[in-house]
Amino acid sequence: MTRQSFAEELESAADRIADMPRADLQIILRRAALMLRNVSGVPLEPATADTLVLREWLETNAYLPVRTIDEESEIDGSA
Image 1 (cartoon, rainbow, N blue to C red):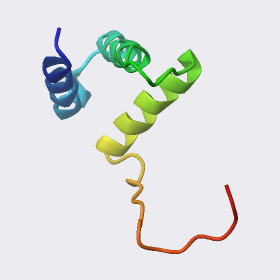
Image 2: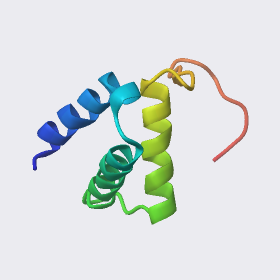
Image 3: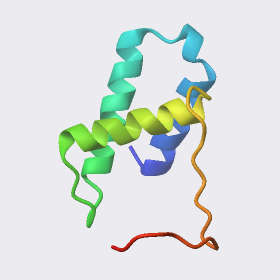
């Protein structure tokens, strides 16, 4: 399964979330976490990957507000 086809599957699941069985949703979310874990150059702990997938899903389905980053603004503190 390609990343594109998997992204389409996730979007389709989001469109029919009310009709989707919980077990199917769990499978899709776990597959998404696995794909994120396997991205080269971005090693993620399993809990982190699962959290990122869940947060993205919640934002996509309007359960959480979408975060925006203002790249032009000044920030306080240091890195």
